[in-house]
Length: 435
Ligand SMILES: [Mn+2]
Image 1 (cartoon, helix red, strand yellow):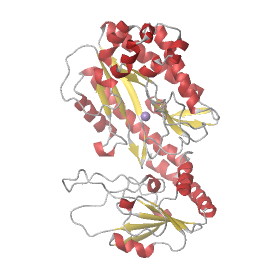
Image 2 (image 1 turned 180 degrees about the horizontal axis):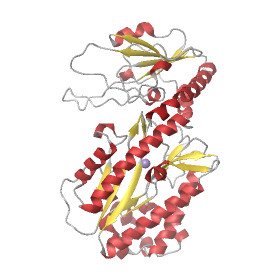
Image 3 (image 1 turned 60 degrees about the vertical axis):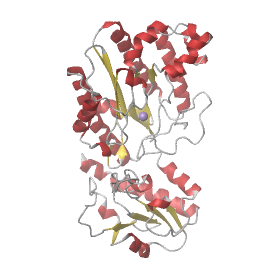
């Protein structure tokens, strides 16, 4: 697998160099200097560090999580990688997962970060780094907004190499999801045990996941970002499990959510029907994706489909259009339909305008284009703080509150896939990994 991904790297690099050549020409720059960053302190009371989160601008070029490394990009020459190799018997440098990129860069090694300055370019230079990531005095302006915007735009259309990294990150995550789901069905252990099962099966340490796993049993599934895992084994009986977890590959991360139900009775039956319905509408939304469509129109469509599902299940007690207009679906499904995905879990460049007022948390307001990668993740939750206002006014008649109480112990459902836009629709990385 890694060799197939590596074979796509030269084209990825050529695409990146062409994009940067255009940026250099447009802004009359001789070079762009990109810092890899450095590990952050775990907390301010101790001298322990987190694993390095390489700056996204650097990771776009090289899958090398190396503290204080710097990449110099100039027109017409190979990028220059400046590495700081300190003589340190306490630590070893983190290693890249693959070595396919070394022959494509000019490598300069220095002993201290300060020594790197001698190898920096002269002339007009833009620096992509934050102040605390730069091991030397900046040789030019930091993060000029128009240069940053152009770099972000180049990240929205993924190369074949990037798609291959995301596909592998998805396969790794699916292994974790399968194992967690099997353990839940089998002996339903604690949230912490399910989290650890996921890590083992996806082959990752906790600090390597692209974001903190969300592992939520029962009512915890109504907490959109439940990451404080319960260590107790819950009582046997009808129960739900929501796992929102990804995996990393060469700096790219997947982002997948599945919801499971076990046991019998009215609650498990109704919640199971809700899970099946959200899964169906999620697939219907995936089928509607095509270049030229506004992502926000797809988000609005998801509310119409959810409203129809609520009516079908007897949870909604008004025409579907009324449930949307009166804000009922937005109380049950308060987050966005999805977001751009890539080096960052919420990747850049696809929210160039604010969403409309009724979609405040939507992170993707782009017009869908070939090469974009984003998530499709509708959900439905019993969140008391959002339902209380409905119960308190004339919208109370729009919901069957007994049904809401029946669903409450199961928390909520979210189904999330990662998709790549093609000329004719999508490639669904999650479904193909699951097949
Ligand atoms: Mn997501």
